[in-house]
Length: 162
Image 1 (cartoon, rainbow, N blue to C red):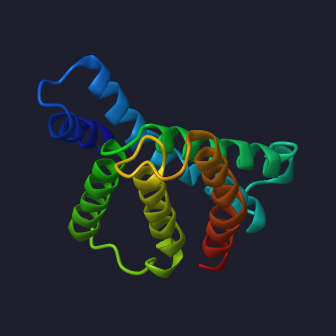
Image 2: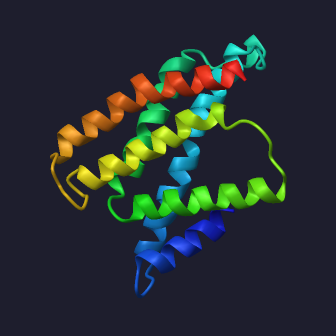
C-alpha cells in the first residue's frame, strides 16, 4: 500500500520525477503511518496485551520521542507533499476499508484524523508552507509539543477504550 501511495505522490508532486521527490514523498507517507506505532505500543501496555517482561523500560519516553520525531519529519517535508500524502493515505484507507468491509473503529480513529489535520495545517502555515506565517523553530516546537501532549495521549486513550 505504501509503495502505491508513494508512487502516486511522486507523480503528483514532481512534474519530472526525481529520486529526491520520490524520497520526500515516501518519507511523508511512511512517517505519518509510523506515528501510529508508539500509540499502539502504549495502548498495548495499557490493555496488558504485552507481557511485562517484553516491555521496553521507559516506554512512555521512547514513545514520546518516536511520536515527536515522526511528527516533525512529516511536518518538515513541507507543502504540498504533506496534504498529498494525507489525501492519498485517507483515500487508500477508504478503499481498503470498503474492500475488506471494515465496520466500526471510526470513533477510535478520530484522534488520528485530527492529528493528520493538525500536521497539514502546520505545514500550511509553517515556514515551509504556503503561507509561511510561523517561523521554522517556533513551528517545529509547536508541532512537537502539541503532538506529544495532545495527540499521543488521545490516541492511547482512544485505543484503550475500544
